[in-house]
Image (cartoon, rainbow, N blue to C red):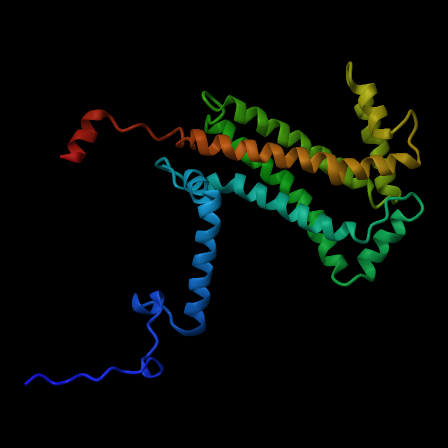
Amino acid sequence: MPKLKLPVPDALRPPPKRPSEANGGPSGALGTAKEAGTATIDWVDERTALTGVARWAMFRKIPKGTNWFYTLGSATMFAFLNQAITGVFLAMYYDPSPTRAYESTRFLTNEAFLGEFVRGMHKWGSTAMVVLIFLHMARTFFWGAYKYPRELNWIIGVALLILTFVMSLTGYLLPFDQRSYWATIVANNITASGPFVGPYLADFLRAGPDFGATTLSRFYAIHMMLVPVIIIGLIGAHLYLVAKHGTTAPPWLKATPPERQREDRA
C-alpha cells in the first residue's frame, strides 16, 4: 500500500537555491553580490550591446613574436591618464593669475595634504610620458609598423608626439617662478623664428605681441582644456585603427610557408 504524503506548509519548505549556489558558486553575501553584478551587466548590455564592441576591440589575433616592446603604447596611455588625474587635483589648488600662481604652487607643494606627492607624480609623469612615447615611436619605426595599411595611424602618432611636447611646454610655465618664466620666453622666441607660421604661433602663445599677464592664462587654458581634448580624440582614433588593422610581427620573423603549414596540419 503506497504511503500517503501529507502536503508541507510553505512556511516549512526550504527556500530554493540561488543559481550561483546551484552551480557550485559562492554562497551568502558574496554570491548575492556576484549575482547582482551579473544582472546589472546583463541589463546594461541588453540596452547598449557594449560586449560586442569590447569583444571586437580585445579579442583579436596576436602575431607570433609579440613581446614587452608591444606594451609601450599602453604604457604611454597610462602615463597620460596619470597626468590627467593628477592634473585635476592640482587644478583644485592652482590659481592661474600672475600674482597668485607662484603662491598657490608653493601652498600646494608645502602645505596641502599629499600635495607634494601629487605634484611630483605630475612633474615626473610628464618626463615619463615623453620618454615612453619616444620609445613607442622608435619601436613602430624600426618594426616597420608605419607601412601600409597603417600610414594614417603613424600620422596620428606623430600628432600625439607633437601635442605631448605642447603639453610639456605649456605646463612648464604654470609655477611662474624665475626658471619657468625665462625658459618659456626662450622657447617662445625659438617658436617665433620658425618659417611662415612661426611668428603667428608665437603671438598666439603669448596672447599678444609681448610676454604679459594674459600669457599665463593662455598657457593654462591650452594646457588644461585645448590640448587634452585633442589628445583624447586622437587616442580614440589611434586605438580604433590598432584594433582594425592589428599589430605587426617583428621584422626578423618570417611567415610560415604554405607547405610547412600543411605539414603541421597533417
